[in-house]
Picture 1 (cartoon, rainbow, N blue to C red):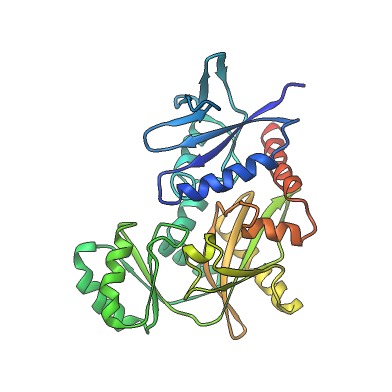
Picture 2: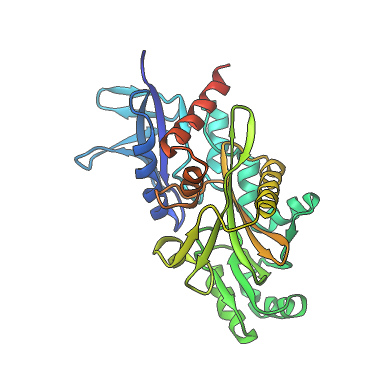
Amino acid sequence: MDKINIALLTGGFSAESNISLLSAHKVYEWIDKSIYNVWLIHITIEDWFYTFDDGSVASINKNDFSLNMPTGKVNFQLAAFFPLHGPPAEDGKIQGYFDMINIPYTGCGVLASAISFDKAACKVFLEKTEVAMAKSVLCIDKNLVANHVLEISSHLLLPVFVKPNKNGSSYGVTKVHKLEELETALQKAFNFDDEVIVEEFIAGREFSCGVYELEGKTVALPPTEIISQTDFFDYEAKYLGKSNEVTPADLTKEQTLEIQHWSKKVFIALGCKTLSRIDFILNGSTFYFLEANTTPGMTNESLVPQQVRAAGMNVAWFINSLIAERLKAVTN
């Protein structure tokens, strides 16, 4: 039987492209090469391409997403987004492209991705679920920083988190304790996005819970508690080892069921598909929603692989099962 050609997408248009590459190499290892021909396709603003061992490249024909190889044309039966963080996958743009040329893909569709990536829009969209969320202010004009400072100070209590509205991996995020620090934090965040969201700080324990679809069921994984050695779960804590991650989290059975309930509710409300990760802060007895990650990190040390192993599953089996599920859905 001929192997199925899978395009494993990596890179991207944002500062998260280096994180995408870390995830890509691990996911590549996990995919079953006895069933699939796996092509690691780099997505950049300038070009979409496959890199040979000698460093030379073959470009993707964007008219039909075929690969122009010296030996002939390669067509793909599936595009996999597991290792592509940030735009154009996490914001839904490339999903629209694949929808138009009728190539199936793993992961969330256009709407779920776009809403999840836009933190302010996501909060508005999820209000109907009654999930608890921090109070926030959206700042949309980098030339009116002084005005934004006044609005924030009149609506929110310090400390606050200042974040690019559409970015990930904690790039451009600042925890602000004093009013005089707000302007600098806003300017920093505006370097990463044209919109900035400012949220009240909620003291508590931070948790993350993966959710996946398999065999027609939506399942929440064992949650992880993130204990950061820095002031918050920033880039250093996420990727440079400055955090302790406890999986499964030290929660009561009732608390575990509650965070899994809210994680699945957010996943379903947003219309997520395949796999996502939902983040929360536990304050008192309430889980406050932080954000939904539609392309969560997939290195060996990332949270979702930790949770998959805690659930008693092999990560390679898990990834291949999600791929097979998507292929089955489009061939039936």
